Image (cartoon, rainbow, N blue to C red; front, side, top):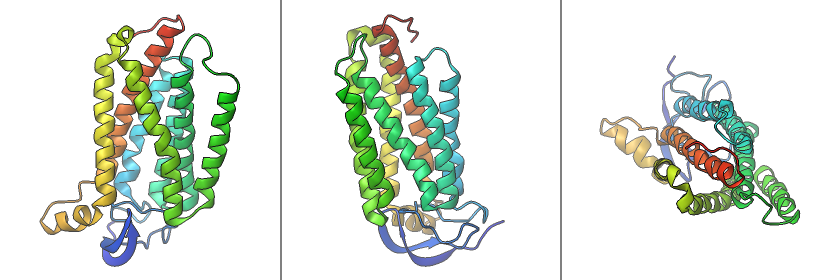
Length: 262
C-alpha cells in the first residue's frame, strides 16, 4: 500500500523546510528528536521509514555473525551483542519515529562505544589504569544517558551526538594506532577496508543530514530517486564495524597470549 505524499513544513534532518513527507501513519506524528531524510509511510502505513528500517537488519546480521564466531575474543563478542541491540533499536526507531524507541537505538550505541573505549585502552595483559577508569566510564555513561533522555529537539540531538561522537573519534584514532603496530600486520588490510567503509558511511550520513532538500526534493525533481543515504550508512557502518572489531579482537588475543587468527 502506498500513502500519497504531501508537502508540509516539517523539521527533518537538521533543517526546516518544505519537503515531501506524510506524517500520518499508524504511529502518528513523529515524536523523535529527528526525522531522517526518507519520506515517511510511502511503502506501508505501518513503517515510517521503510528503507532505514530494513537496512538496520545489517547491524543485527553483523552482530549475530560476530557473536556466534569463536574466532573473536570473548570481550569483543560482548561488543557484537551490543551491536545486535543497536540494530533492533534502530529498527524500532525508524519504523515508528517515536522518542522512546529512539532511545532504544541511541542508548545501546552509547554503551557500545563506551565498551569499546575500555577494550581499546585496557588491551594489554595487565591493567593500564586502576579501578578509577571503569568508574569514570560509568559516570560518563550516566551523564550521557541523562543528556540523551532528558533533553528534546535540537538539544537532545546535540547532547547525544557530542557524547557519542567524542568517544567514536577516540575509538577510531585508537584502533588506527593499534592496527599500525608491526605485530598487527596480519590484519592491516582488514583495518584499511573497515576504516574505508566506516569513513564512507559517515560521509553519507552527513550528506543525508545536511543536504536533505537536495536529496529528497532536487534529485526527485530531476527524475532521480532519493538514494536513501541513511540506509546505506547502516549497511556500510555495519561492514566497517565488523572488520574493525576483527582488528581489535586480533590485537587483544595476541597481546594476552591467546591464539589469534587474522
